Length: 153
Image 1 (tube, rainbow, N blue to C red):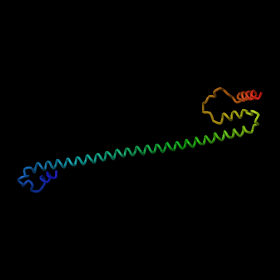
Image 2 (image 1 turned 180 degrees about the vertical axis):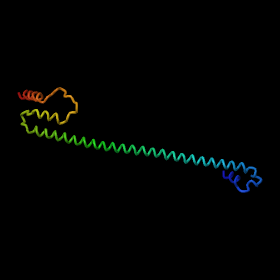
Image 3 (image 1 turned 90 degrees about the vertical axis):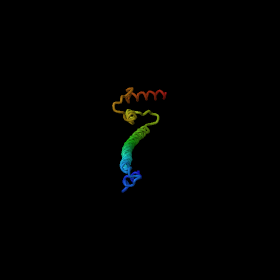
Image 4 (image 1 turned 30 degrees about the horizontal axis):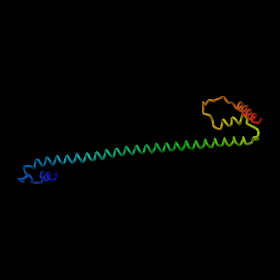
């Protein structure tokens, strides 16, 4: 390309008898070569711009995933705190119930309706839960006393 440009655009090159007839053709070839080089450079820069755009999309997607993971971690921590608080509350209820039961004499069954209700209320029922078996506290007490009396005989 350099040689063609030299022949086509060098001053007085068309006056040299050996290259003179080729000067016009050399100018045309130099002009087309320059256009081809410009097109290739433009294509390369367009590829670079496309790569940059793709990397921007990838970065935005990664940032979105990171923000979603941070939000999920915050929700997980909040649920873990709520679960821990519920576990502490249930443990306190169980400890209170155990303390109340330890106040009863050893040989006596000593369970009353409040004790049975207390056992049922340590873990609250879900809304709309059905009482399976229809066990009411007074019926359970009678059953417990019957078993205790049978064992004591």
